[in-house]
Image 1 (cartoon, rainbow, N blue to C red):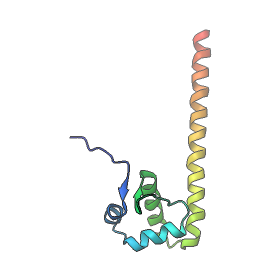
Image 2: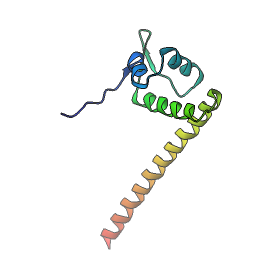
Image 3: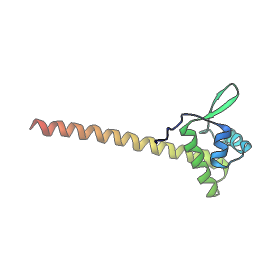
Image 4: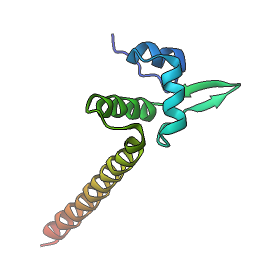
Length: 105
């Protein structure tokens, strides 16, 4: 049976998922601007994007990157992903135009 991916996870679930203590997650939220879970009735809910950010934070921690540097590096990573996505979309649009031009000939 196919597993359904959930949209949001509670802070407890994320803590268990990554084996990261709750206080550490809260600290990262304060120090790293890219980690901003949704809050409903004082309960934090993490999106898939938040989970991806936590994975990158854990990678940076394993590389001994200081917490102050993490936010900067995560911004650079995010910009790189956005740039690649835009480039891909532009290439696909050009490909479509070329296909249409070829079909006209």
